[in-house]
Length: 82
Image (tube, rainbow, N blue to C red; front, side, top):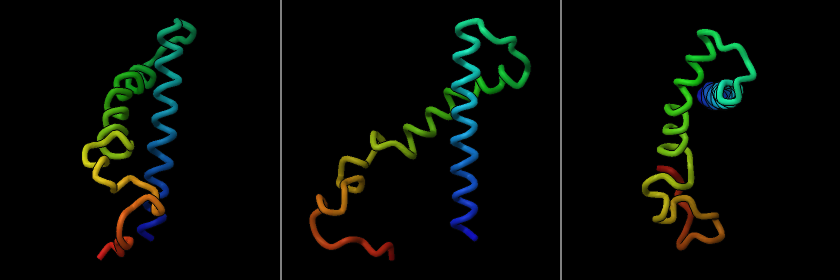
């Protein structure tokens, strides 16, 4: 059940991020008439980008210590998570 909840959360984050980018680009180019939801999505874009860079990206803090390396590039045995 935990894996399913994480999958749903990741899917919702992705949809929200892409909808936010779409609304921001349409607003920037003046193509769409922006409503309250569009303004909320435009305001949410920096927050979503910060979450991505801080927690999910390979550019996050601590990723240079080898935790983001491919398994064949890591030194030593793999961690079992316990």
